[in-house]
Every structure is written in structure tokens, then in C-alpha cells.
Amino acid sequence: MISTDIRSLNYNELSEALEGYSLAKFRIGQIYSWLYEKGVLDFDEMTNLPKPLRENLKKDFTIKNCRIDVKQKSKIDGTVKYLYELDEGEYVECVVMKYKYGYSICISTQLGCKMGCKFCASAIGGFKRNLTASEMLSEIYTAMHDLDVRISHIVLMGTGEPLDNYVNVRRFLELVTDEKGLNISMRHISLSTCGIVPAIYKLADEKLGLTLSVSLHAPFDELRSRTMPVNDKWHIAELMEACKYYTEKTSRRISFEYAMISGVNDSRECAERLSELLKGMLCHVNLIPVNNVRENSFTKSNDKSIKSFMDILEKNGLTVTVRRTLGSDIDASCGQLRAKKL
Ligand code: SAH
Image (tube, rainbow, N blue to C red; front, side, top):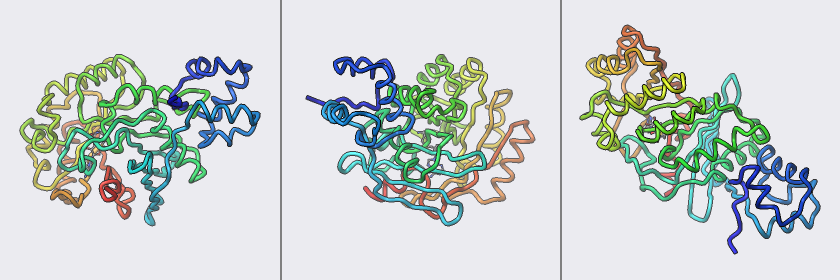
């Protein structure tokens, strides 16, 4: 018999799955709390349950866990990067960053990625599979236990395309925001997408209240298609329509991510076109000096180009920030550690 992945069940499903156990209601509450609030890694840690019950649970269910394979801590800013092993030979990475407001974790949503963005280390080695909700949760619990901190903010910006794994990501969001679980506010969660248009409409209709980040990286179709194959499927105009729909439905500001690549997308013309595209939209632009990835030849724009680019956007009325680089001494950008391991 295949044992059920217990940390993917919501409260009602857990109650149903435990029907045969004829447990008092408070016991189900205890189990739920161990799983989701405390995030135990093993049934034996559920110390207020009778031993025979724990033994039965072990027979019928599994708790998906991550084993820490590599841990790197930045000497510059304390950012911690993990490479976890899931099942044998399967590696996933996540990053924990400390901010004034608390700890934020950047998690992966897939093993590898199908999207093939040319500047991204996650594309190296292709796509293996989607992560389950329990695996995404265990990225968080493993880091929390290891660092002994409470994590209050989540960004779905690690390896993978979250909107290409909609069902599991949706379940993850339900579980991680549950009051009886980690109780992380949707307002403290950001989801980053390369622009899967139908899924943006779907997400908008759910009105979850999370922050949507859209990886735009170029304001012209021809240029965007050169670095982001997803653009051949949904052009910039279609993506912008979906983004407008999202802001209208949710009244939430979209964050447009723009990786500044020297000589590729950092011209004056790009800045002017980007300003036209985003004019009047409820949004914010985040400029990211592209991280050098060993396997490709892109280099980051220099400070002067970034400053002029930013000035043009601001002159045109946009709100702009330049992303602070964290963990630059520990390969902290997407997929770098995993790519190295593979
Ligand atoms: N698939 C999602 C989320 C994962 S990537 C997405 O595309 O948004 C998270 C962010 O990092 C994206 O904005 C992505 O374009 C960006 N990114 C990837 N490689 C990068 C690099 N080498 N330098 C800077 N940003 C990068």
C-alpha cells in the first residue's frame, strides 16, 4: 500500500483520512498542529500522542522531508542558502534572508524548470518534476528548525515556475496561510511568474491578496523572445492585458522584475518603451542587476546605466527600486547551487 503524504492534507481531509482511527476531535487538532504549526520532521516528535498511535501513523502515512546537503552562510549579510536532498538524487534549493521586519524565505516550486530563460541557472539541466505542497512546506520547516527562527515572509522565486505547478502551489498557499498552521499572511507572500497568461487570469479571479511579481526583463517582443522563450507563446501585449486584469480584480500593485543585462536591455530606448507599457498601471518596477551565471555570458549593467535607466522611468512617473544584492558571496541566485551539484 502506498502511504499517504500527510502534510498535503487540509484539516477536513486529515479528519477523513483518520476516520478509521476513531480519534477524539482534540487528537486530530494535535496532529494538525504538529504537522503545520510546529512543522515536525518525524512522527516521534509528536510527543503528546500515545506511542501506539504514533506507530500506526508511521505505517499509514509519510511526512515528506528535506535533508540538508549543503548549507552556506553569507559573511556579508547572513543570508543562508540551502541545498536540500529530497528523494535520492533530487536536489532543491532555498534561501533565507534576514530583513528588518523578520525572516523571509525564497522557495523553489519545481525540480528544474521548463521555461528556459537564457540568463537563469534554473534552466540548466531541464525540468524534472513538480514539487508537492508538502515538499514546499518542508523547505520552510527544515530551515526554521535548523536556524531556530520564525519565518514570516515567503517569496516563490526559487527554481521553477509557480504558475506551471498551479494545483500544488495553490494547496501550499492554503496550508501555509492557515490560522491553525504557520499562519503566514497572504500579504507577506510574493509569487513570481515569467508570464503564464491563463494562470494569471485564474489567480486574479481567486483574489488571494498575495503580491504578484512579473518577470518582464524586456519591453520589446523580439528582445524578450530572445532571452525568454515563454514570450513566443504569450506576447507582451497579452501579458500586459492579463496584468491589468489582475490589478483591477485584486487592487494589488504588481511588481515588474527587470534584470539589467549590459548591452542587451539597458538602453534609453528600452527605458522609454518600458515606461509607455506600464503607464497608468498600479505597479512598481524592480531593477535587478543580472547575476552572473557561470554557464552563460550575460553581464550586469554598470551602475551608471542602471542609474540613467531608473531616472527615465522615474521621470515618466513610475515607482522604481534597485534590488539589493544579498548573498553575493554564496551563489544565492536561482538555481546556481543546484546546477553546480548536478
Ligand atoms: N519562474 C519564475 C520564478 C523563478 S525566477 C519567474 O520567472 O519569475 C525568480 C526571478 O529571478 C525572476 O524574475 C527571474 O527572471 C530572475 N532571475 C533568474 N536568473 C537571474 C539572474 N541570473 N540574474 C538576475 N535575476 C535572475
